[in-house]
Picture 1: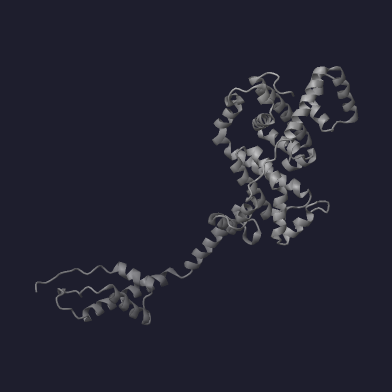
Picture 2: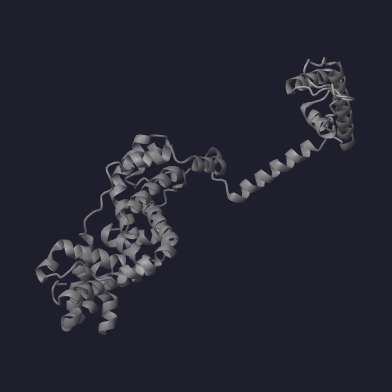
Length: 198
Length: 198
C-alpha cells in the first residue's frame, strides 16, 4: 500500500481512513462534496442523477482508497474518479438522450417568453444562459471547462485527471471558452441585440 | 502576428501560460487591433462569469446517503462484491469463472470416483430388498373391515406405513438408502387394484 504524498493536505485524513477511521472519511466527504456535486451536476444536467453519481464517487473512493498510490494529490485523484464517472455515465445515457440533447441545444431561451433588455441583464438569466451554453458543449470540452474555470484546477492537474496531454487540455479549454462565448452571444442576440455586455 | 493566430492564444493569455516572447507578440497585436482587443475582453468576462456561477450544494443528507451506500447496498451488489472482491481483493471475471469451473470439475470427479459397476450392483440389491420387504409387509398387514379386499396383491399401505417399512429395511445390513429407495419405487410398478365382489 502506497502512502499519500507528504505534501498532500489530505494526507493525514487518508492515513486515518486507511486505518479504518470512518470519521476521517466523513470529513473528506464533507470537504469535497460540493466540488464533486458541482462537477457532476454540470456534466449530467439532472440534479437527482448528479447527486446519486456524486455519492457513488465517494463510495468508490472509500472502497478503492487502498489503490491510491499517492503520486498525485488526493483531490486530483478524486476529480479523476468524478470525471471518469461522469463521462461513463454520459456514455451510458447518450443513446437514451440523443434526441433530448439535440432539442436542448436547439431550444433557445426564447421559449421562456418575451424578455426585456433589463430582464436579460439580470444575473439570474445570464447564469441560465451560461448553464445552457456549457451544457451544449461536447463533453470532452465541458469537463475541461468545469475543472478549470469552476474548480480552478491547473492545466497539469486536469491533464492528470483526464489522462490526456497538456496540449489537449489547452486546446479543449480554448475551444470550450470560445464556444460558450459565441453561444451566449447567439442566445442573447436572438432576443435583443446588445442586451448583454460581453 | 495575424488575428487568427492571436486568437488561438487568448486562453493561454488569460491563464498566464504564455512564454514571454509570445506574450509580447499578443500584447503588441491587441494594441493595434481593436477587434481582437474587444474579443479578448469578452472572453475574459465569459471566463469570469463561468467561475462565478453558483455552487451546486448537495442535499443535506448527502453524507448519510454515502454511508448508507457503503454499509448497505443491495443484496445483489453485496453478493457481487463477495464473489468478485473476496478478502478485499478485486477478482477479475475470468478468474472467478475459472474458479467456478474448477470447483464444478472437482465436484463431478469426486462424485464419479466410485466404480460404476459397484454403484449399479448396490442399486439393484437395494431395490430388490425394498421391493421384497414392502410386499412382505403388505401381506402381513390385517385388512380393516369395510375395506375391499385385494386379490393377489396386498392392500394399499398408507404413506407413513411405507416410510416405516423403508426405515426398517434401511436399518438392516445392506439396507436401502433414500436414493436407492427412490430407485426402487421407480422400478416397482404400482399394484393393480383388482377388487373382488364381497
